[in-house]
Image (cartoon, rainbow, N blue to C red; front, side):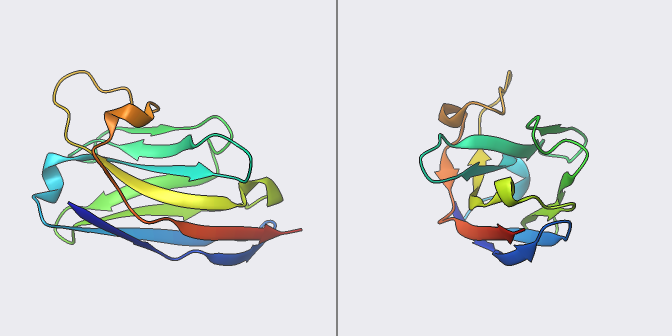
Length: 125
């Protein structure tokens, strides 16, 4: 699976950005999908994740109530809508795909088979 993320850039505190990640090379609906982020000097952390059908979503504590992950299986795309941006949201954002069946722990990096190249989001105060 190839993952191509886009939509990063410069945002204002309190503003919004939307990231997209297009998948190719495999059946998109076979994969649980997630967004992670990594700020300089920090560990990569889960932002949001969504199950194959889109029926369940999971979020990191720092973004709950502000960010929304969604997917369009017909378009092979997963989205991250980021609202009420804060300077601490500044990071490189990565989309990831997990083909695991059965129990899935979305916050664990090792659960993911494929990663996109990352897109930088910078939030100014």
